[in-house]
Length: 176
View 1: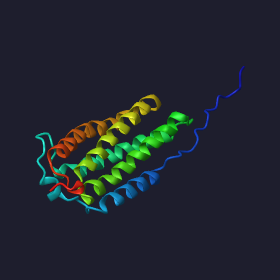
View 2: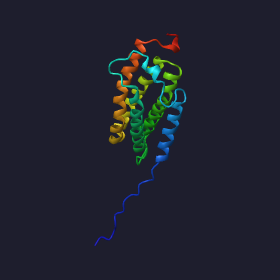
View 3: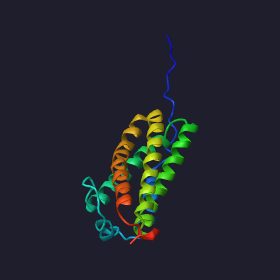
C-alpha cells in the first residue's frame, strides 16, 4: 500500500498586487491631467477639422478608463507568472513605456497645443502596444485578449490623430 501523499506545489505569492495597479493608474493619470485639466481642452480638439471616424470628445475618458483597467489586469497576469523570463521583462519595459506615452499625451497635445506631437505619441503607443500584444500572446493568452481592445482603439486613434495632424495647423510648430 502506497501511503505517500502528493502535495500541491505552493504557488509563490503575487508579485503584482492591486496597490501596484492603483499606483500606476494614479501616477499616470495625475501626470496626464496636469496640463489640460480633468477633461482635456475640448475646445482645442473640437476646433480641428477631423475625419468622419473621429470619436466624440466625451468618449475619450471612459474609453481610456476601460483600456487602463484592462491593461493593468494584463500586466498583473504577466507579472504574476510562476517564472519570469527575458520575454516577461521585455513586456514590462514595453508596458512601462506605454504608460509614459499615455501620461505624456495631454502635455504634448493639449499643453503644447501640438496635434503633430500628439499623433507621434499615439502612433508610438500603437507600435509598442502591438509589440506588447505579441509578447503577451506568448506569455499569457488572457493577457493578450485584455490588451487587444487598446490596440483596436489605438488603430482608430492613430488614424484620427494622423489625419488631424496632416489637415490642420499646429500652433506648437508655428502654424496658426
